[in-house]
Amino acid sequence: MLPSFETLELEIEDKVATVTLNRPDKSNAMNTSMWTDIHNCFNWLDSELSVRAVVLAGAGKNFCSGLDLDMFQNLHEGSSDPARVAESVRQSVLKLQSNLTSIETCRKPVLAAVQRACIGGGVDMISCCDMRYACQDTYFSIREIDIGMTADVGTLQRLPKLIPDGVARELAYTGRKMNGSEAKEVGFVNFVFDDYPALLSGVKDIAKEIACKSPISIRGTKEMLLYSRDHSVHDGLNYIATWNAGMLSQQDLMAGIAAQAERKLADYED
Image 1: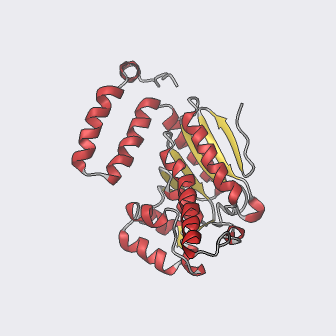
Image 2: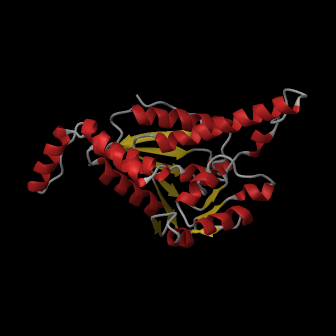
Image 3: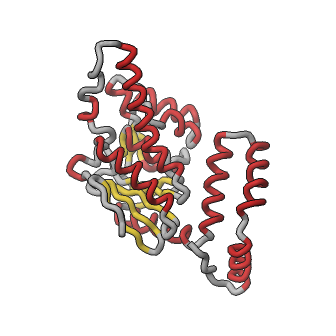
């Protein structure tokens, strides 16, 4: 039985889970419940063996309009001591970071299908994904700068690893919109589709192709890519040698070789 969430819809088909942000009347603004739901959902997907890839989408006109501004209410309440207030705010931010990091640490590849507006926290969110895809009318904006704050939930840490540093800085300093075509040009998105139906269908097809591969090999590949992002080449080479010494599946290897010889898809255990 699938878990249910207040702000997300979850469905699974052909070993691909589709997680849909489901506050369309609020342009999928990220309220307190959504942050918690994202964390719980992706932790569940990480452990669910029947899921081999995940599509992250948004219901309605926009993918995500960012942080629900209601979350700023009562942010500095609870004590008259500035140090205690600061520590409380810090812990709140760290919790939000952890909520989104659950997307990145989910062992299954996560593909973001982004239509129209992706603002602020939405950029934080999709920067945690393995791949991103857009529509012709999609745009991205690091809007935190326009409300007098420094983005603090992951964009400034992850985006410079995904696009040229100077482009990341310009977007962060100005808050300007980067459209789908520019996002494709700088490597932030893999492909730009004509419209939302084509986007969702195309991204699900890519996810289904991933789901046909050895799940152990896919998990190892994601682990290596994330590790190599944050470590030296030498450390990465050492890690993959150790990983495959213990995690290379002879069962999957033989199934893959046999399938290649017969020009068909292998049938891998979940």
